[in-house]
Image (cartoon, rainbow, N blue to C red; front, side, top):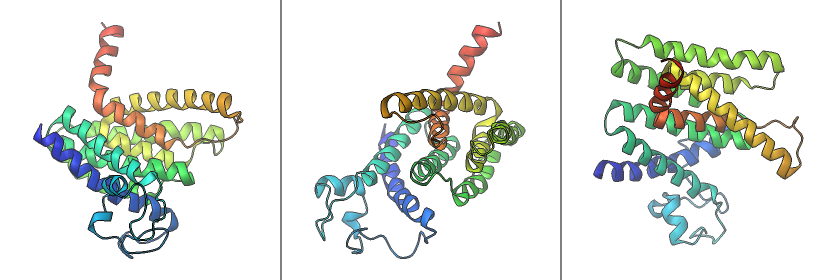
Length: 250
């Protein structure tokens, strides 16, 4: 249980850094300089301000320097990251696998919020996930790494086809993100991810049209759905695959 609690705390700290990535990467700003500051008054943030979830509660959603209202986005990202780490710790326990999946989840969370705002998925995050993920995969599965390399190729290729057919309906960032997810999860689970993401996107698109009276032609970012499908595959993928195999292949 202590590992779960520590993971929650560590996840909130990582979430604070993800807020920096989400804000700065789309604007091509350095993530190291200048130091974190209030987006309203530009006052440099000190230690009490660097934990959005805690400071948002303590200071009632306002900057403690200028009193300006702070977006709910900042504590939301931190809370989602903390809860994600908590779930991963509870399901996976300590070890290399937890480290790899926590890294993937952090990247997916940042990509999702950037995709929602700007409809882009930064190459810098995908490159970092690939370079950092490959050694983690080799450490865990040095004798079976082929299926994870196959997962990366399969994830990218399966989204490349609809991208070619739709002539831009599927972005290049989505294709690369699917490849990164496949690298971490392997070829079996990337199939589950793509199926789950497609179902979620279809249901959300239908709701978008019915509730918001939008057109089917208006594009929706696919990155968040890939992230949701990946998280479901991480937490329950083995159970779902076993259920499918027992039902249809026996």
